[in-house]
Image: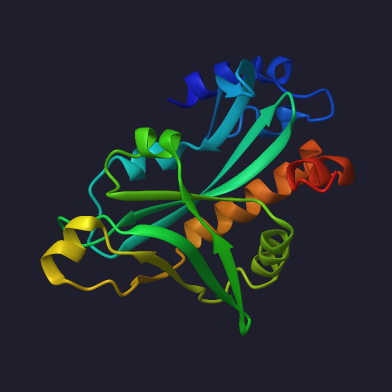
Length: 216
């Protein structure tokens, strides 16, 4: 698997924007890079997608009920270079909450991230009964910086969402579902590593941030 990842990464720079150096993700054990095509304004464009190799391995395995794993993902497309967070969740059997928000408590501050389902995530993580994505924002940039400063501390988090239709029909409850979790050290280290590499590659340049945040 590693050899395949390195081989794929070797040609990655040709897929990326000119200002983004994807070679910083190249040849690194535990990182997978692939070419992808996505639809942007009714046009198919090619780009690169990078994620932790453990994402597919873990997400496609059955995990204990209550498990939440958090993975970073990087995309370099023609219109910008993006980073996002993928929450793979394993709620109670037979339930599939519609999570719309994630919270991480770091050094006494609660950071709130909006989440939404992603067809790509759902396809990649078939083992997870719920999988949602949160794009990088100004607020989550602050969260990552704080996480890097407190990486050795216990980080608590929670996902909030609506019960799915089956749950509402069965229980009659429309109250939010909350899944509590603690970030694993592996997830903390991976999030920080991708954040650092995203910056080294040029993703944190101000013109790119303004573009992906819709500020221009």
